[in-house]
Image (cartoon, rainbow, N blue to C red; front, side, top):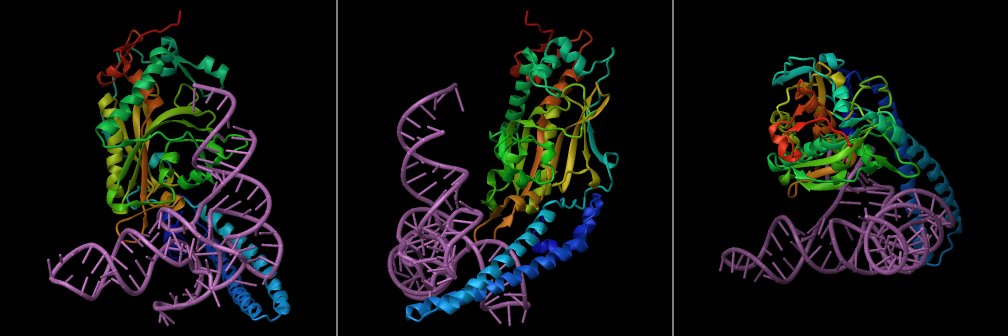
Length: 426
RNA sequence: GGAGAGAUGGCCGAGCGGUUGAAGGCGCACGCUUGGAAAGCGUGUAUAGGGGUAACUCUAUCGAGGGUUCGAAUCCCUCUCUCUCCGCCA
């Protein structure tokens, strides 16, 4: 969300920036709305000022024992007018705020132009896709064959887009979580945090999921609790309505959480396997940065996420999203895409964004040093990484001709195994 | 789930329905004092929005939302959160 006075005085520049991402800002509508808002506000406030004066006078008159019945009738009438004006002003203000809350962030100058994913720009490519002397399988075949992945029972106990992991399949997921957390906390300087997996709607507003994207979320009945779609929501909101010490920034946090997404409107996309599930797990990286350092921090955060793939020996590429492909709150985003033999292509495994002050303004996250005035921090986040998709990448990239999967060296202590072999309960 | 207590400025803590945006203290900032420091003294010290080139001024805010009243931090109702006890529970 934008700062009110900044938005007002830079409407045309903002509209031009938003046009890059294909968002048409109706500047006339906003100007009108803003004028109406200010008129209503001024009217209500000046009437309030005279009521306050009249009321003070009644007070002092009554102290002198003078009858004030006439004044009281007059002020009572003013009160009714004020109520009406207030309602009007409030309605217009609300209309203005709602409209403003639905305006996406402006892309940073370094964001490539373009309309959709085809215009994204590859910034680096690391590793080479493995060559197989046999026909490699997709994980949705290989997993069930190994007995470590079970879609049928998941559909029975819950429904579509859920999975059950068995044996070393379950343990591989857990190994990846621990590995990622250990690297980020031990090597990259992140502080681990374990937040609630449900949040209230104020938090979702803070990070920008609400009001526009309620349909993508799961909401619990008869409460204001929502299942988190990403750890970004609880972790960024940790410091909502707080003022941080500018000198101590950046804060670098990492959190493991499950994530829940309704995937409304994605019918038919990634229907096979565990690429797109209603429930998946993620290790998330979140940074609170000084405004003058946030782009440097975005590079660092992206490198930290990439490092997991390097250590796992998985081939990937990093792309800079074009203006038209970026998320609502983001000013700049890098997607990291891992190579998946089952798709014979790259698939997003992390999305690293700088939101600048967009979320901080919505969530009231400020920082100041000494006596300086508090300013909004810049927030960043990225997956480090999506665990389910990393699981897929391991299984598919390290599969062998005999149907087993060799586990990368760094994971073996966590898995207590060198290889995934056929598993069966019986 | 049941019973009770509470929520006031950066913090602690007053507050009779009327000039209380809010006493007092602490903290913080600046100044005086000092060889320097402490103590002492003085001054200042919230946020958001509107108007104004500015000085400044107006409005709102005492957990949130309603209500009573000419007027509410103060009275009434609802909700949220925190704490204590009981029950249940990992």
